[in-house]
Image 1 (cartoon, rainbow, N blue to C red):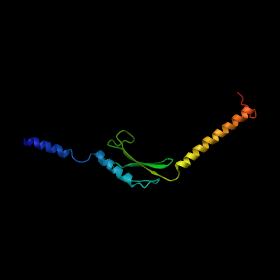
Image 2: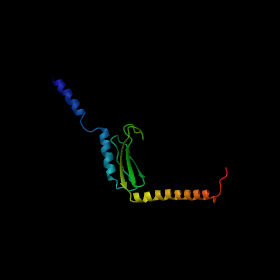
Image 3: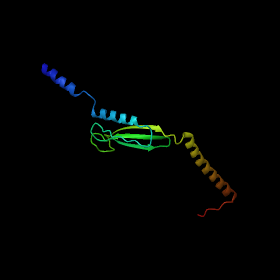
Image 4: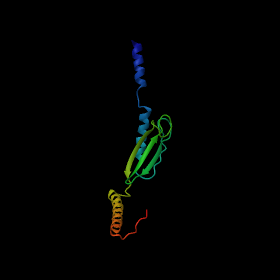
Length: 131
């Protein structure tokens, strides 16, 4: 009887505490939360497997996006066991209205150019294309 309780006690104790995945995820989130939204971010933190974290920042139309990555238990980058967290912050260098204006100008300019060519061709004023 006591043997059963002892085995059960050992099993319970050995299963307690956060896993390596959970510890790594906590480190990644803590490091990502330090980012202030700029173009640069460096960290010397390591994951629970003892390996350094990697970071990258991509600039989008409206946001900077930070990726903080652990290569996971196998240590190989960019595969299915990697643990990744991301953060996004606006960079304020452009706005939705400004980007929409740029697209509209491009479309309107192309449409106007095409309409003028069509009118000239219809009136017989333009150069005819040789086939």
